[in-house]
Image (tube, rainbow, N blue to C red; front, side, top):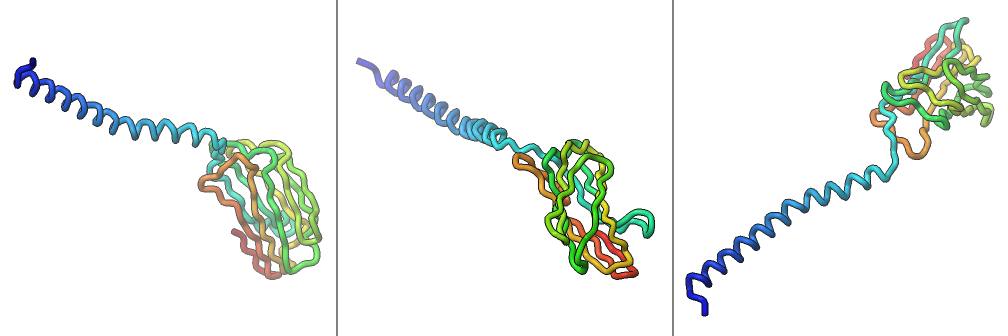
Length: 173
């Protein structure tokens, strides 16, 4: 039969062992949670394109028409399939858009709406310009909204811009 000292010692050892197990389990919970969260984030597949910028521009009277510039973020190119939809008001037709600085198609959606679609990636930091044949001596407003393809995110990106002309003054954002 065991003595009282042996029973107490065995009980103390068992208590310490249980505490060790509980403490170890408590520390493992955050590690397991982190290990589970990381693959879930990676599984979403979103590639962060960073802070790309869509900006309106008034152009230069008689030289370059008004329109927009799309600049890729500094670290990632804008992918093929990125689109910019331009809608106009104040005129029946927003004119013909030309594209410089990259490769994109221009689709006429209506007299007052165009869609620009990247047909090749826009390199990191590069700028694509699309300008209309409208003159800033005509009163109009152009609004543009960029959309990136599924599977991409754009932390800090500026996806909307506008150009407004009042026959004399032009402003862009």
